[in-house]
Length: 513
Image (cartoon, rainbow, N blue to C red; front, top):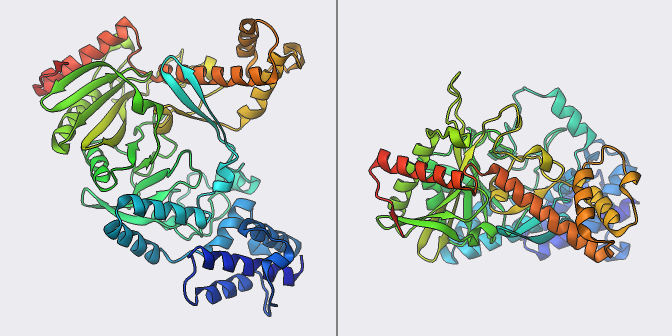
């Protein structure tokens, strides 16, 4: 690509930034000069992006990536994902401007309008990559617990070899930023092993008197997938303060849900080192889970949900009463033992804690709801990855931690599944035989079971439908594995014992409804 063509690509990006409101008065000149300097172009020609056949801003960026590659520009020798962020960072307004606009909209137009604006801004700057999210495969599957939502995540890019090497070399070292959530990521140009965040912006919030920040996840798993994180780099902690922050957030943004991953390994999320929540505007299968039992404690309704993971749903219009009961249940669960159901709160050898909760909050009209999902991260010889974790016979579909999002019924499955599930479809359609597949094919036993139950060869559409349905069933079984009180007589008795113990500890009157 010639320098003239690169200039036209730059002009196309500047036009894009001006058109969607990223660039204000005179900002276009600054952005153009910044991009020209980035690519080492001193005397630009005039032209238009259309003259070069650039259909949109992403084609302009791709053209510039080719130019940088052909010219061997060292500081632009970046993986495609980082290159997009580096370029869009030159068009992205300063964070103070973003925060000011968000506050103004929140005050004048309301929380829904403010969130919609920030989400649109994050997609316009390409921090949220909707072009990549569209690559994800998504479907729903009926199970005994209701309809599960399934996603094969194809949007998150494969790690660049330089990133993998850097991660190994820097293991244990103190780095800047300290983690992927820290506020210092804003505008950071990245390094091998740490993503580029030139186009990343956040907005401040105050929760329980502390400074927190709101951002959107770059790889959205659902609409308006946001992250709310502490200004302080400190470990995850599920306690009374965390419960209060959830309710305060719901008071500010009643149209969103917000939740906390558990704060222990195995049952927690991928980032335990930085206190944070996840939220968004999405309806999950768990939202509509019916109660199997109900009680009342004063004006607070308590429901045991018909859901594969043991969940107590608390509902009340008054947050003080809701939070008081939720914290009592949390504190009681932290210390609850039930050997009959393999639940031990602390290791006898060293006192290591094992009981925690995944917590989800939402609003329904004037009511506040808290879903308290009981978790335990013990391991034993039979289940070295976790007694209440996906069991080994289901690792061919899901072996990663079950975090907040999947707890609610949205499976995030790895991209490795796409090709291997296609092989299973070929088996069901007769295009391949089990003998054609390698001995270490991960779905061998599962595929054999599907073949025996198919009753004959399936059409391509039937094979796809069958595989997708069965993936959903396996995912629901993974959630059952994670449930601490199983949907059995022993499990139900165990939950009753826990609630009775909690009532005794705190003088509660849980009246059946």
